[in-house]
Amino acid sequence: MSGFDPIRPPSPDLIDDCVHCGFCLPTCPTYALWGEEMDSPRGRIVLMRAGHEQETLSDQQVQAWDNCLGCMACVTACPSGVQYDKLIEDTRSQVERNVQRAPLDSLHRKLLFALFPHPGRMRALAPVIALQHALGIGGVMRRSRLRRSLPRLAALVRLAPHAPLRETWRRLPRRTAAVGQTRGTVGLLQGCVQRVFFTAVNEATVEVLAAEGWEVHAPRLPRCCGALQLHSGDDEPARELARETIAAFERFDLIAVNAAGCGAALKDYAHLLRDDPEWSDRAAEFVTRVRDVSELLTEHEPRAVRHPVSIRVAYHDACHLAHAQGVRSQPRDMLRSIPGVEIVEPDEWELCCGSAGVYNLLQPEPAAELGRRKAQNLLESGAEVIVAANPGCALQIAAATAQLGHEVTILHPIELLHRSLAQSDRQL
Image 1 (cartoon, rainbow, N blue to C red):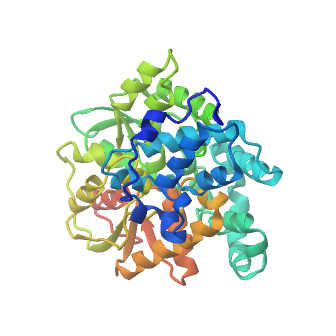
Image 2 (cartoon, rainbow, N blue to C red; image 1 turned 135 degrees about the horizontal axis):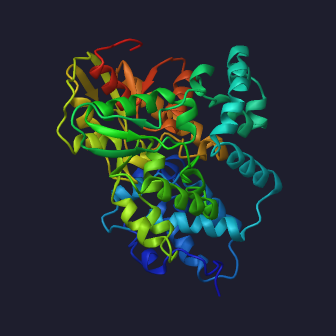
């Protein structure tokens, strides 16, 4: 008897690793908001154990798992090494296969995944988003009753990215030669949202890597790495995109990623494809060559000259970088390599900003509360610029600071390094 089907259920052995010590509680965003045991990591693990012992999954179980941001702060905090990331990933896949969601909820999810993992569709939508900003619809939505009656629609409008139309259509060169002696080949994952609305981040990444001696390749396919689906439980499309990504990138010496959510997904491919006899070994080998761009750059002695950029920055730890990948020191080390950069640390670094993939579009109210909390901490740091290594975080923080009445500059760390190499402080 089990509420889970036999296809990759959450492992009972991993569930048993949790000793319910409570170290995860202060770092869990939803527990910090509500103080409810079922909305803590250990509470959700108890519900996973119950899922193995009952015939069907209850609405309360599904709601508790849906409330989880998947930020993995509990993984960082856990002294017992509980692999909550694997547990929640497998549990969410079970929910999507075995639970009938309400029609409107199901439709909303289908629409999100029909749009965001498809760069071409997002480019087609870019003029509509630009028009929305020109008409000030976001401000009207914030002030109207629609914000409360249609919270998911309001979240879509509020979080719509500001990007010049000409940038959404720019393309990266397929190959960029290294400057000087070649260190090796790097495949750059362009991402789906990143390549459309954060073109400058990808361009800066290519130019910095080339300046440091890497031959950079930027395949246009696959269109997406599967991160959004993987972290939301839609595992079959995620598995197919994982196979396509491996096939496209495994020929390079290293694979560079500049979006935290994408990097976490790529490093999880071995778990995702663990029962695929044709791909499990390839996935395990592939994972060993995946690097966040800050990891790649700090693993090797710098070649390009860093010119001074006098700026005070608040570094925001993207959850899928700091917690899911355990990458915290490398982005800071990369920033410290720039003369004149002063890094300030905001309070509550470990708490999620509320973005969490598409969480802020599925659970807009708690996401907005977490966003305001994060924005307030960042603003109180006194920094001139906020630095964040994930597009979702950048959009969430921009929207939250705007709601607090502040317009702030948000950069990817690689953009700041790029400006240092180019001796440019424009737009800072």
